Every structure is written in structure tokens, then in C-alpha cells.
Image (cartoon, rainbow over all chains, first blue to last red):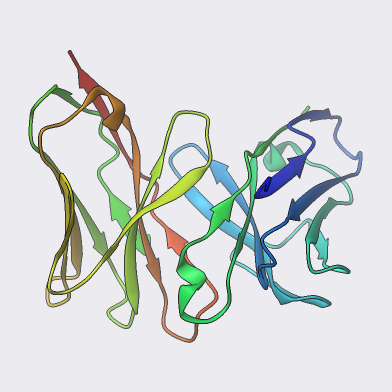
Length: 114
Length: 111
């Protein structure tokens, strides 16, 4: 039981390049989330999904797109990376309903955009 | 104004000390409250939920004061392994699907 895994763990991009971050969970959770964490800012929600095939915008969605084609996977795309997107990205999943508050996080992806 | 405010610390305490963190929130309609713990360069993990009546889990006690809109976490008999960042978290009104995280308070316990 791996929990939540993220690929890759580290990445350096040049401005304007694109990339996709992959999140996978094996807990059969309905809900999945993408956050970014910056010093002094706390975790901020980028996009989330409450089920396969559905996604919604969070607090800071601009510059990112997501897809949830399979229940266990949640992909985060950066179409044209900018230095402001340098951050640590965490994926999380949770059960639906009243237990949603216990979110299980992946180990994070450290992204640097130069 | 941030929706969740925490003192960033660090709080430097000796082993065995009692330490308390406070957190304030701005939206009185917020539904539920939690403390998460995040070790250095690791992912956050749920520590405990916070109830108006207060709740205790071993050396940890969490309290919610809705009238003053603050949450507290008390750690008694601090251990070296308690060194981490403690995140104050709430769920906004409007359904069970989103959490809002504070920036965290860093605790360093020394021998």
C-alpha cells in the first residue's frame, strides 16, 4: 500500500517550458487535490477533484490545468512555466463526505523555473 | 487579511517544556478545525481535530474558541521528536471538500 505517490520528485524547467506532474493514490479515495507551498504562504489549493472526470478551481488556478481521467490519478500541467511557479507541489487525496478533512499527502515535487 | 493567521515562530523550547500555539481565523462561518504536523521537507499529516469542547490526545490538547475565532494547541512534556511545523487548518462553509491551511508555526525542541 504505497498511499499517495508523486512523479517527479525534483524538476528544473526553463521559462516557457511545459511539464506534467503525476499523482497516484491506491486508497480508492474520491477526492484529490493539488497544492503549492511557498515560504510564509502556507499550502494553497490550485485545483481539486471530487470524482473521476470532474475538476474544479481552487485558490490559485491560473497557469495550471488538471485532468482526472482515472479515479486513482490526478495530473497537474504547466503549459508555459514562469519563475513565479517555482514552488513545492503537493498532491493529496481523501475520502468523500465528512471524512474529507483527513487528507493524505504525497512526498511533494520541488520545481524550480529559471 | 489572511483567512488563517499563525505566529511563524520558531518556538525554541527545552525537552519537557509545555508550549502553546495559537491561531486566529477571519471567517466566522468556518465549519471545522484541525491541526496538521509537517516535518522538515516532508508532507503534512493530520495531527488532530479541534472541537469546541476541547479534545486531548496524549500530550496534545486542542481547543476552539468560536466567539474569539481562535484555535489553540498545547503540547505538554515536549519531546525532541515534536520538532516540526504545526499547521492550523480549517474547512470553510459550503460543503465537505476544501481545506484552508495556515502558514504554520515552527517548533524546535532542544535537549
